[in-house]
Length: 165
Image (tube, rainbow, N blue to C red; front, side, top):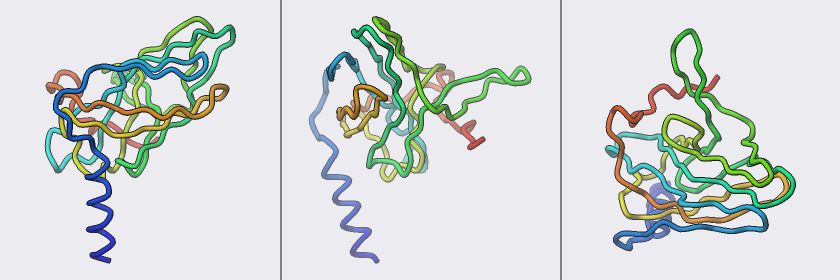
């Protein structure tokens, strides 16, 4: 058991890029372009959830939908949105994000985002990790997510509001 844990920890750590500052990047797959995929650095080793953002563009003539996301850095990755409920802003799991034909959707703080539950290791600034996005029409797209500085409290840094509904 201990050997397995040590092996898995080493495997996860080895997959993080150790380059210093990584510039923004785009990934194109068919009609879909993913711009500047990034995640917030963990505020401490005790924080077990993370969040990722990006911009999704669809240059096609038909809409597409982001229907899934996966990464080995977390036990579970989900698409999330904010909703106002009883005058309180709450975050909730959503099944898909529609990207209109010729349009774009921004996953950003305070809006749509990818929630990472059960981080297997803290997200460290200036490193990267792989993520796979699954689109209804475009299929799977592999990309590298850049880890950027953590947010201030005002930007929703602690994500304790996330509850499975």
